[in-house]
Image (cartoon, rainbow, N blue to C red; front, side, top):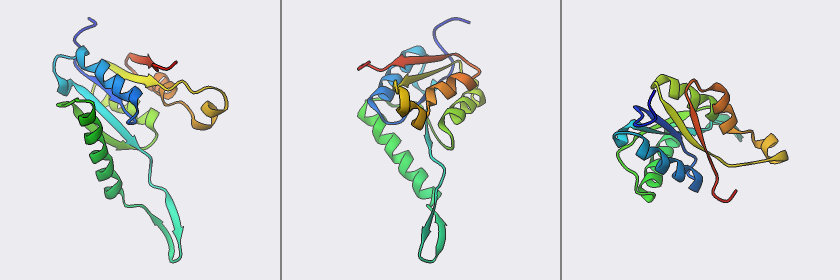
Length: 145
């Protein structure tokens, strides 16, 4: 397998500066921008209690808001023409599953570098992707590390 160009590169984003860097890193690795699949994973709906009973937030509203936010994010970093995907669930597992679904050659993602208690409480999406992905994963060190 040659290093360049890749047929399909998956880049999970969380709208941070680090994920903007991951998108910018992925673009030169492919022949054309649409070969970069930018994926954002939303949290599953959370039931909430109100006076009349239980309800779930509207999934269409959440997905539309995520789609709009992803578009603005990519515009703000002057990235266009990429394949964009929004999914719902556990980010680490969803990213690994999506990469397998599209036969990705590579996943490019940042590491936010959480340590200690913060990492235990928040978990590590990067670590889950590394464990579950069936393709190579390029983990970018955060710039302030």
